[in-house]
Amino acid sequence: MLHALPLLVLVLTASPPEPSSRALNAEGFHLYRAGRYPEALEKFQAAMKADPAYALPRYNLAATLGVLRKQGHVCEYSAHRDVIVEHLTQAVRLDTRRLARARQDPDLDGIRDTLGWQRLLGLKPGREADVPALLQAVSWYGPAAGIHGSKHSLRFLPGGRAVLWTRIVDERGDENHGELPGTYTVKGRQVELRLMDQKPRKGTLTRAGALTFPGLGTFTDSEPECDA
Image 1 (cartoon, rainbow, N blue to C red):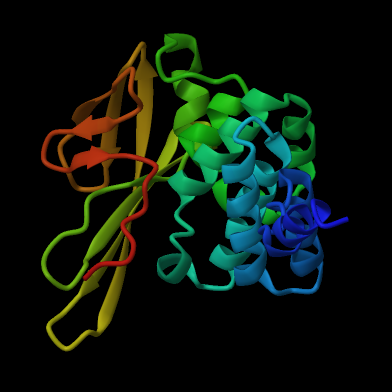
Image 2: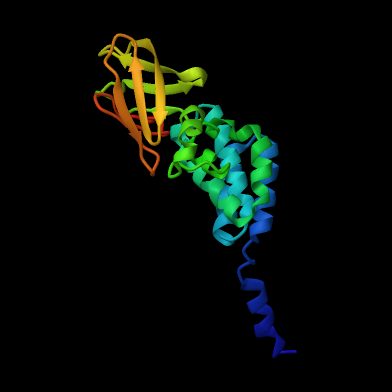
């Protein structure tokens, strides 16, 4: 009996086992269902760390970030579109069934117009035949300009129509929005953009997915956010 005492003490003082990835994911899902999204986020992150090969917490993390993004908490929780797409892409690589769920998941609506989502659907900027479809499916954002965060974006619409939107922020913080319509044509990777009252511009969609026009700059699917 005396020999058993050291073993008993060891059992009583040992640290409890770490929760499994599945247990952590389940806890996160309950928090998600309760609308406690920041707490759910922490559980999904812990589940991913416990088992990097487990797809479900990666998917749930992407979906939870999508909800926080919709709620306007982009900067607070790094709910950027490229971050959400990366987690979702990893989840699909680990379990292809996640893509079917993602197609129907409203939490992921905020990434439908990204290159990453289109890649998951099978469209690739490296394939010339996909260029026309990608131009229309993706929202294209130019770099933020000036210290006040002025922005411009470009959309390609059906029927060869295009629109350049601008948001200019002055020194007082007041916003002025502009819209410049135009047309476009595509030949291979080359895109000819003809905006109203401006000379035609010939741009190129690179294999990496960047759209560059002389005089306008480079457009990507990354929206400028969280400016200092």
